[in-house]
Length: 316
Image 1: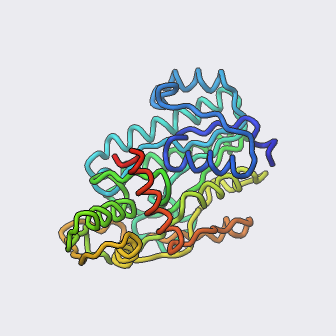
Image 2: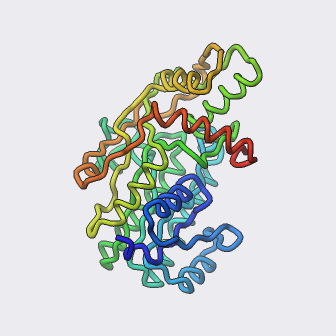
């Protein structure tokens, strides 16, 4: 397996997903990947990306670089989310093809699927209905990236393919007070309540929406698994197979943090997609299953947050 990763380039290696892929490669004894921070390579700069890929000549590329955020960030910065993610996808995929890179794995998102897709969501649900309006710009950019990979593969025979992870959590996440995703946002809110002795925390929405969560280390394992396949699917769902309401999730996080406070809900705020559970039967049939269940992963993530905060990392 290691020969397939001799010259792997991981783009976005300082982000949550990219750093997990780098950690997992080290844990499996694979060759250290090539990496490039923003000062070395701006993925929004087409000419710079082409020069870099042509010079480094990787044999495989993991595209984990992306602009990401929660409901508020997506809905208020839709143009930036669409533009930046489109540029990353098109610049990197085209540069890899021009340089003769034989393999590219593009990281998408479960938000590519229709807002009211049949549950659990199969890979063939793509483009069968309207998207969730609150993150439509981001979703369209991700769809464009994965379809671009599919078209290059179909037209030129290169192994460019994609993985669609569900909601992620774990080390390296962003805990920004306004722009983070739901689980890290909950961890921050409850930790601040615990430390500050706050007795009531008000959360967005009704808490009725259902979500699936996957530890980022499991996603990294799935990335390497899919990259090790000789003939991977054009895109494949990667999830835990477990779903939880946001209301129940909030209670789990409150307990994991140890906050002594009550929960209130602001129903004037959006819930987002009512339900989003991925059908992961395809990747499971190929031989991959997750290892870290939510009840085990949550306490670890709370400790990650506290440790990263103590060292000044990713508290935003």
